Image 1 (cartoon, rainbow, N blue to C red):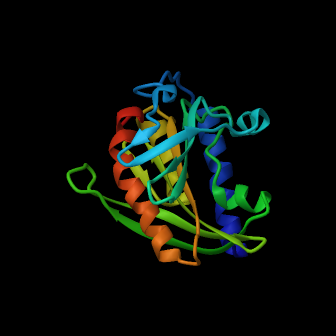
Image 2 (image 1 turned 90 degrees about the horizontal axis):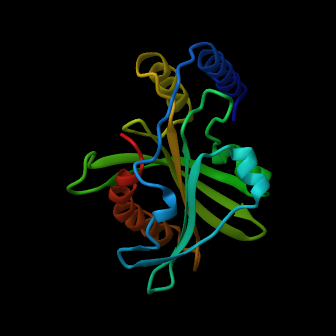
Length: 213
């Protein structure tokens, strides 16, 4: 991240915290359904639930969440994490993988945007942030987005801007963070990316049953 981007991010963070602290309204926004009921079978994918260490959840400050590793019949794997925040007014803001992953020892070697077409869904096209990670000879691809108050957002900056706007106009600061991770196998990044997108297409209609619009 350049010095200019760092300054912009810092200013946005400060403004967000000020607005959320001093423009206060009661919130009681719950998921449409608790994530404890999230399916472990999605299309041809079968999942096994996982959990972070409790200290991680204390840091994240989520009100509800799901983490599950899904496997397809061809052996392809995708790890899903969704964190839901009922309110972001008291300092529990959504964390970006761009900050968390390097702390876990992963180097971000590429950042870009990916477009996903989802037929017969509203919206039928979204953008996601893509990270290519490397550590000790291993590579992973991450796709993530912010799904908050009816929007799919693919920018940390825009996400914070909408957070402030919605806190003022809609009196809402609830939000969700969705992250998909898959290991790059056989050195084929394109196949790994396609696998992630295939999973995201069947995932998103289900997410909309849980995340408030």
